[in-house]
Image 1 (tube, helix red, strand yellow):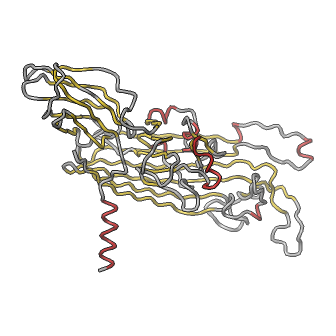
Image 2 (cartoon, one colour; image 1 turned 90 degrees about the horizontal axis):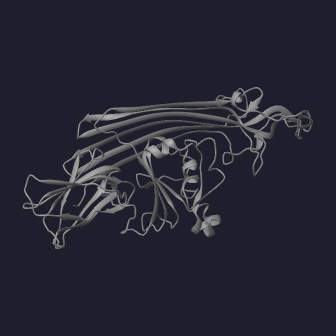
Image 3 (cartoon, rainbow, N blue to C red; image 1 turned 45 degrees about the horizontal axis):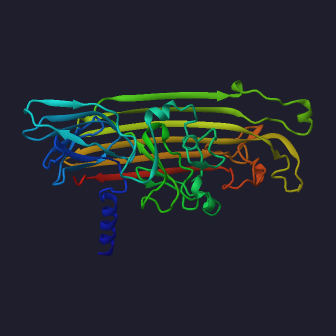
Length: 432
């Protein structure tokens, strides 16, 4: 009985309609030419972003309408009432969790008559106090930055980002709002990272983790800088990734870039070599390759989206070399060697998503697998997901706490060979 109750509780939490995964809202008041409100007006929002194509509501006794849980995209809203001219408002851009207010005036007219109203989408959300910065997929792709969440955090006004922000490879990045930095030293950063509204973070590391957030395949990224309510367990900023989910047309993308020794220079002089410096900072080897594809399994009913990404970055850790006496029980002293240290970071990511519509119910499932491979074993003969070379090793730290390869722990740029799994089922059903 207890097991059944626990299973039921877990299922309820997993399938509970997601009010926490708030999305955009359309609202406003409909009135006639005299200013009197009009109840009973049918309001229909249509967009390719909706798997069911349209979402509708009816104005209440005060002439107000409200259409909730709208995906990011471009909408056309139609207002109809018998005896009045149909009004159509096109090209309304919705993003993030904004509430867009569209007041409409309807005039007495024929049934077949339609008035199309054009205008800019209101930029000011007059119904929410929070400050939100939204980056859509076009902005994410156009920014001349690394394909990492830290780069997007650095591009967000009002945030303070730690030194991992400009990292060449995706890594754990802490951040705060300017207003919350007073507490940042005690909580290792008040910022929270969420995917589809669910916090994805390490238990010991505040609101972030070494999980690589899939920013290149996001439909949009919304950063709540200030004024959030109960969506987070802390008062700091929240960055939420809304993943792509497919659509009614087949689409795909491919990406590849590469860098290496050929793309960098150095100022290593004989004087520097004389004091023991054998390498300079910079990329030794790096690549990032990804592909994605999505489309309909059943048009207007079931969509799919899948992506794969493989990235690897190796950068020099100048000033750190291996101990030539490592493993020699007869020696206790440290002697430098020509084996240089490198920071080695590799990640493989497999992602699959399904989105379906059953009546007013939207069902979706997101599954992600990542393989984290960082660093190398200490010895050449020890097999690993990365194998060290004869003249280099993927261990060591040239920043605090400054560790030699032999002394590196797993918490400070050590050797990692570990999987990550994220599985998210969702059910949403608008109440209006």
